[in-house]
View 1 (cartoon, rainbow over the protein chains, first blue to last red):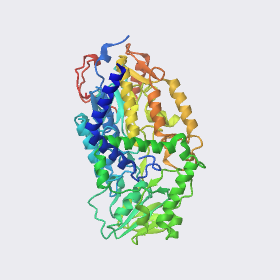
View 2 (view 1 turned 90 degrees about the vertical axis):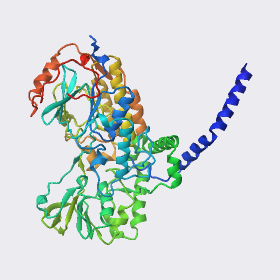
View 3 (view 1 turned 120 degrees about the vertical axis):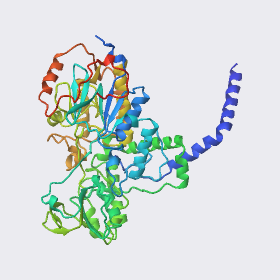
View 4 (view 1 turned 90 degrees about the horizontal axis):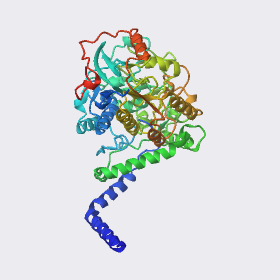
Length: 47
Length: 537
């Protein structure tokens, strides 16, 4: 029973990853781009 | 005795349609509280960004942080300018259908708590124009332009105006422009005006610490990345975390700490990098007080502007004005064609709004005796159902994130009262006093205490720091999640006309210039009011 559940879970994970890979990949790229921006975000402390 | 009235959605009045007011309305509507009216004295939304349209007006906080978490935006620059901020707040209001809740050109002058009706009566031009069970003020703390009282100011022959009331039809070409003041606004104005004016003369009472902004346009890749709302949210959260790491514990504004020393070193490097070849200017722009003693200025363009041939920096304050120019404290007169007053704003919590609580006392009178203070900057004992956005000791961190935290707290409090079918909610005195003691302890020893700055405004002569939050934003955020519920909030139920209600009625008799309502109001109870989206009388 546990083995079947693990297989279903694994297959689902693979399907989701493949189906959404382009989108997830774009989010990861975009996040990396925004996180490496050089803006003064530390020394500024109010509006 | 619990009344049925609490079953009906409460009426909520918000004063001010800037970032704070619009966001508050969004949060209330998301929580199912639709009977909201925003009273705005101007003819448009935006608050600060509606009024301040001077050349070079832009935000000091990175754009990604100067936006609501629920409304990412494809910003054009790292630090955007007034027009884009105005576009943004209008888009927020449009998307969340807030605009139809706003009554423009309506300045609420008095809000008077009526104990028997358990609601605030809202006065404009001396007459009641609305009522509300809950009152939320969103007028900011820097709303009132600080207009100098220099002798002869009215005699100046040319155009003279405050930066927040910019005269866009004044042509600077070929003119000598005097800019009085050297704060954040002046450092944005001078580089822009210097591009067109014949000469700009800037008058500086005291230099301020300036740190680099690293302002620039976003690249195409970055613009594409900004399209991902998830990525933008992750970046926003990370930026807040990175800022807070430096601010936690208040080390940044404590002299002698590594954080404060690093900040000062960055500011000194900025001076040397940009003015290293002009030792005369280095001396003029280097402050003698501790870093963070006053609000630091964030600018990349100011120091280069000082090196322009048509810009002069006079290290003296203006003391008088003649028909042809200005006179400094050393008696020297400087001729000019246009006089720009970059003299900042008067810190006044609640702005011109006079709020009268249960005892009838007007808030400013109460604060005159204690110094401006409020629980989490939002709640004050004996002012039931009143919430202050960006109130005392909430300045610091990222203002827009701060406003979001406060709006969620206020929404929760109103929903809590509604669930309990209570008519009123306010902070318990013991909780307020304990919070205030801890706050004062945290403010002790900060560099803010030792400088002449606006942080002590409204202290009633006590020297109390009234504007600043002494720790990281995430600490404030955590407190807004913890300091709630029955240990902190006191609920009230209408049980008939109480002694305090009578006292309130009596005290109202002494209020100045409060006329009778312009027309007869319905005398229906809250319980029998029809469900409506506004709280207008």
